Image (cartoon, rainbow, N blue to C red; front, top):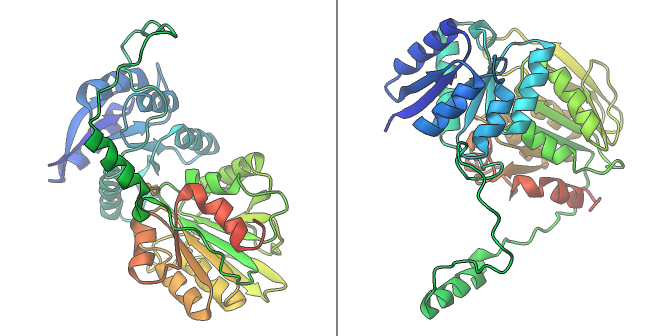
Length: 381
């Protein structure tokens, strides 16, 4: 069945162009269009699309508020379109925090150098987010419904009677060994660095992890997020205001310090040089057409392997594609540990799946458990 897409943008030209791109793919169909956030809410309720593409800045109601309202009632993945400006970056991060699944630049030339590649990437991104149904933020009541009267405290709650056999089956299922999470056992390794790579769904995932770390976390942390150059500075600043540890956009020459997270700048590559006791970050321009991502998880992981060898805890989080797999393989050859986010908590399971399918994953972990297990593993639990 074709993926049904609701296109929301106040520009009639952009709506028409995006609709043409979607309609030209046999796996997708345009379910409808809307020109502001309020209309988007109405169309979302009426059409129940599989994916919504949403402009950030619109009249009547902006995309951020529309995301919040839609996710109160529908588990619909929302792909944001934003301008690559400081204000656009801040608004896009607000939309992701509100529950949007992913984002793309509005200008196709900012997505890829070749127009055909940009269109192909756009279609891939829509298909990827369509596979993920996001959790509703609040009530599941229709947006247009009035608030029901409060039930008196003494009123009974209606329940469907369950037979004794059904109850026994439920108890047996919940009490079975398969229903219990396998206990986490620390490896006992000595580490000097944590390196985390991610893409689609990464901003929220990284925020979940980094804000849960204590101020005295004992290791430096490298963060590689597929993100445009205009966004990484704003994202690092946001994380820094929310986290107990220091978070900064990595700069060339930064000396790695414990308790500091370094976010790779967009459009460039983050490498390491020196020794495991005194390591510097090197930020390099990269014009190679062979490297798809700038920053690339593979490149940073590979560089970390050469400097830190077996002393890295590398974690691959949610994201499209397989970036991180080759770098994880090199780390694994040196004796470092590789963790991968599990499918259930990933927005897109591509990157962690690639690592796991290659037989490189030492621990598969849910996003909610990454920070606590990470602290335990590095000796700070």
